[in-house]
Length: 162
Image (tube, rainbow, N blue to C red; front, side, top):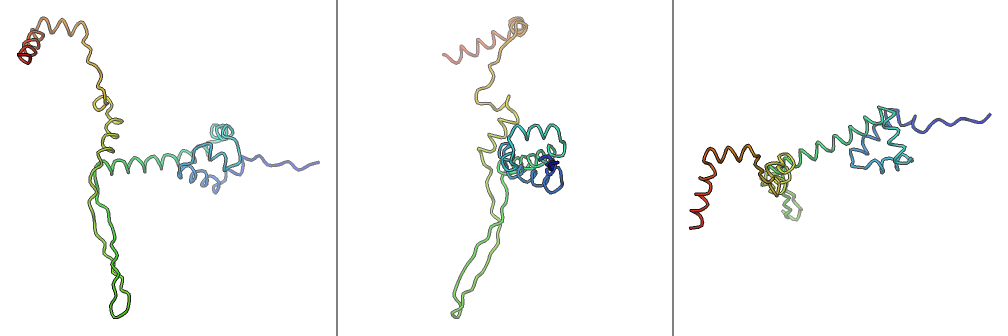
């Protein structure tokens, strides 16, 4: 009788290999790139993830961690923050090189692009480039006519054109 090979997925269920899957996901590898490193097709990885919760959880944990770090970084850039920086001064004293390090905090101003991105995604109805066109219902139009609001609006518009 021949030797029966152990299925490939089994080694990926042990703790060390699960940590490796998580690390690859955390490093930003796509499912296709992870599958390539494992030595399988992307569809096989998809099957493994649906069949083996440990594998799916490892990949999810890695991706969620990176997403959270990026979200935190985007938020930090949108709000502004203080960053520690180091200046190094090199001088000669009595023929010897002297290195002096100075650590200081520098304020990084809020990034407008990060703010816009954040608001457009978190509050799309309020911050989209083209606001939704206000469409009045028949009920709204009747209310305006009977309450005299339409006449006030027309008077205001007439004053602008004079």
